[in-house]
Amino acid sequence: MEKPSLDILGRHIQSLRLSKGLSLSQLAADAGMAKSNLSRLEQGNGNPTLDTIWRLAARLNVPFGNLVAPVSEPVYDEGVQVRLIDQGKDEVEVDAYWMSCAPNTHRQAEGHSVGTTETITIISGKLEVGALDDRHELTAGQSHTFAADQPHIYRTGQSWATLLVTIKYHKQGEKK
Image 1 (cartoon, rainbow, N blue to C red):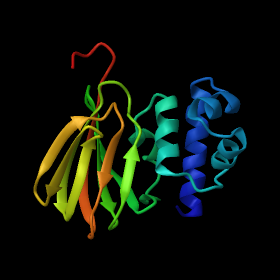
Image 2: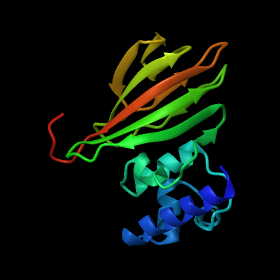
Image 3: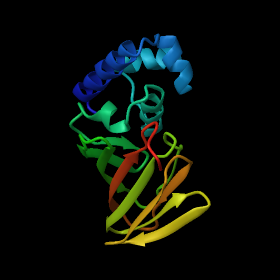
Image 4: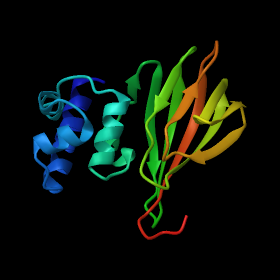
């Protein structure tokens, strides 16, 4: 991520942390990271991984898209690029992302908040995706929806895969 985007992301994380009444130590501990790393990130330094940003979003109790919305460039991490396309402003929180996975990528994502679902639609290439015990191999034009509140994977073979990721967050009190 470029320095201006890191600065924006850092200020945004700090603002969310302060609005939730969390100290630097509390958020760092909750997110499983060193306080010094979170401090550097809030100052616009470092190079956060996708997992780090997801954990911070979860601990701040905001959708990933809310955390990265101010950043205009894709977030990169180990062969994966993710760019927020849009966020639904309706009662149900829905984020849409463009995602690109390099050849021979194996990414295991942590589970998101309880009740969260993901729908993956393949634009090009081939991708194995889903919960660890229920994976599906998809090709261009195919979609799969799965419970994303448990660990799940994205795995490519010998070629790139481009996909649309739609994440629906479960609201407290909403029937699944």
